[in-house]
Amino acid sequence: MHQKKSVPGLIIAGLSGGSGKTIISLGITAAWRDLDIKVASFKKGPDYIDAGWLAKAAGRPCYNLDTFLCASSEVKNSFKKYSVNSDIVLVEGNRGLFDSIDTEGRTSTAEIAKLLNLPVLLVLDCTKSTRTMAALVMGCMHFDPELDIMGIVLNRVAGKRHEGKVRDNIRKFCDIPVFGAVPKLNEKNFPERHMGLIPYAENSLASASIESAAKIAKQNIDLDGIYRACKLRAGKIKEDDRVKAGNVIEKHKKRTADKSCVIGVIRDSAFQFYYPDNLEALEEKGAKLKFISPLRENFIPPVDAIYMGGGFPETHARELAANKTFRENFKHLAENGLPVYAECGGLIFLGKNMILDGEVYPMTGILPVSFGLSKRPVGHGYTRVRVVNKNPFYKIGETIKGHEFRYSSIIDIEYQKEDMAFAMERGKGIIDKMDGFCRYNVLGTYTHIMAAATFSWAEAMVRRAVQYKQP
Image (tube, rainbow, N blue to C red; front, side, top):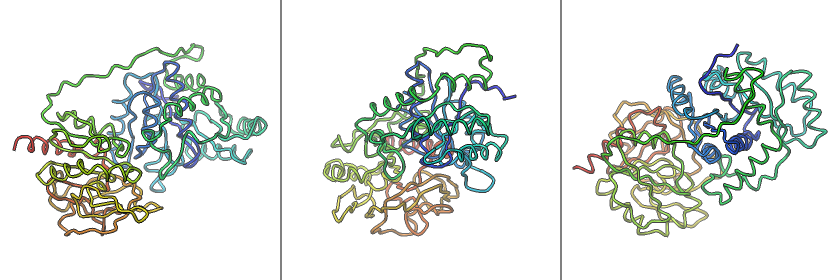
């Protein structure tokens, strides 16, 4: 007997990274949206790229659920908060279903599924395999009997004969529904880069790619069957009820908080890694957000602070370097006390330059650091930092959980130990297990934070902005 939930939903998981669950998640989300089913999408773990694509497919923000960064109660609260005004919830897992940071399964997709009482739709990469697929499914079912695996989607099948063999074996040995079989696809519409799918903001064919994924899902996946199975598990229908897609229109809540300051957010195709939670947290603390692009604008408009997220500045290095007016304006404001909080790609823009293939691209020069680019990850995974030195945003003694996705390398740096606000308890950081380079009212760090886990951050950003506005 499954516990009733307020909104039906599912988690889409694979047996490993690269199993195809992202494109299938996008396809199901977009196809349901085409049927006037309102989907609240989530991404398990720290991820900007998949979450951006899911947001575009769903037509509403995609939120991240992470049991390393956040307490279980906060994960539940976020899930409940952002599931409202939806017909169904879709959570895309990460890596393999049971992959975790320890042998107890902490931070795994399976852990999130059980925490939120969601069934799992398992995506199987069937490349060059038939009967073994049934063994893998059976292994997953018995590895954790508390996990509700609702069904299977076969991926990368080589034809009807291949599909039939896999289906027959799963039916015989596992007695679990197969909700569809997706053939091997041409991946030209979903190019990959360092960390999975290329960001949708950089893909000029993003809308066409989403439409293509939706078409694939409609042609190859039993969308009605999955939707019905989720509704049944949530106790929203009876076995003999007919399910009809709801025709509902999203209504965004208007915020009533008085705006006490303006925080500029550097966001364009070069800097696009922002958790919706972070931006909403700033607004909830009273800030008005103004989006700014160093690719399109020559000056920073009147703002009381700057929040600069990550991205891929290396793919836009020439354009960023060419906008000398913006770079000099940014540096002038920072030197005169404008509060700035920058993460990863934003940290690079605060530096002296980027050196790519022997060519030097000047950045703002706010921090005395030169960056290069590595072919392999320099820092990749969860971080835990302890605040050890004075800085504009955190109290000494605070412990902050975050993550770093970093291909950039430090070529040259001038700093004193007291310039670094953070000591790394987990992760790599900028240099010598230190992170959080501070100068003026500026802090640049490789650690990405999530406001739902780092409660002090949004309040500190707004407080600094108000102080700057009213010295």
